[in-house]
Amino acid sequence: MANQELIQKAIEVRDRAYVPYSNFGVGAALLTKSGKVYTGCNIENAAYPVSLCAERVAIFKAISEGETEFVELAVVADTERPVPPCGSCRQVMSEFFDSEMNVHLTNLNSNTMTVKMEELLPFSFQKTDMEK
Ligand code: THU
Image 1 (tube, rainbow, N blue to C red):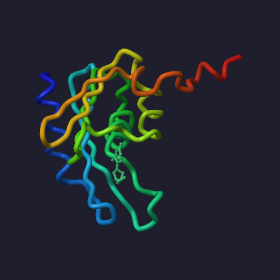
Image 2: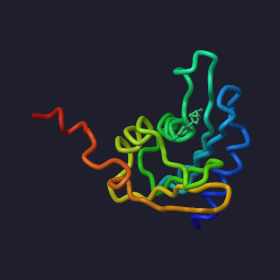
Image 3: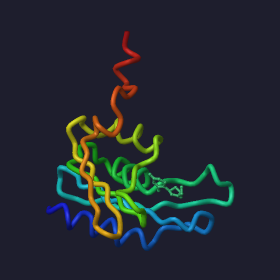
């Protein structure tokens, strides 16, 4: 799948963001090695911290369907620069994505930046760190 197709899916799902508090919609689309795409939008809550980011919705949907191998992720928001994922999402990404996996960050003006997982969250805490 071309990057642009994955980005388009992220743009489309962003329209379903439930954001009555921030009014800031985010969309994400995650391509699996099996060729499926799992999308996610951010979903907020009156109890603000209960809200969930678009990236984690997409990742958790995929994991809950038994997917464990991923090829690339696209994230989009209406930002000046390509949208930077929050720290919690970076940590969740680092749990499931290879360090070399590409993450496409973009905005509605098509300013796109592609970064590797390792660049998004270097020196991340991993399950292997608990093995000593
Ligand atoms: N948000 C995301 O969905 N992904 C990010 O990586 C950054 C922040 C959402 C959370 C909240 O619903 C809104 O954007 C404002 O923070």
